[in-house]
Image (cartoon, rainbow, N blue to C red; front, side, top):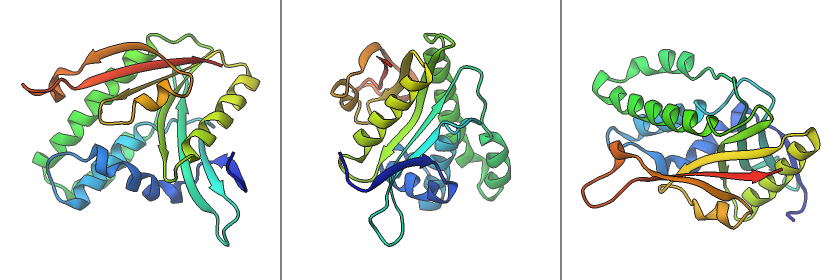
Length: 201
């Protein structure tokens, strides 16, 4: 267990730090650094539901709180405000670049729908999960699972893909429910694999 850490509601001021973690993994193959960060932030915002299940792990031992990890969850029927943000912020980029954002959004929607179709109303989905320090992700994940169990949620679901450290979930008590190939992101030489996991709470 990490010392001097707390779990608290996610603060949007830390969103750029979460973007930093996943830009190397999720950046589109087009555009400059500014656009790549924009596209990745759009992906993340598609996973921030309008609910009270957005969390961060903070190290309080520093003079200023240090952001260590984030986890966003969603329930059946939850919505987000990513489109409003996109419509406002995307005006500075040309249409040919914004096509990459549409590909990202379509992929997220397909995978979210596939995952939600497996869930019951008393299940919950981990939509976004990122860690800035070794061990912080596991610490946040375990504390969130304890909280969800105490609230009566029955099962945690999540989806991920081969661009992420998907084996991490196998090592932390989740069971692989589905493995598929997402053809639009696949190449002649390599399948782009997606994975859906679940865990009883």
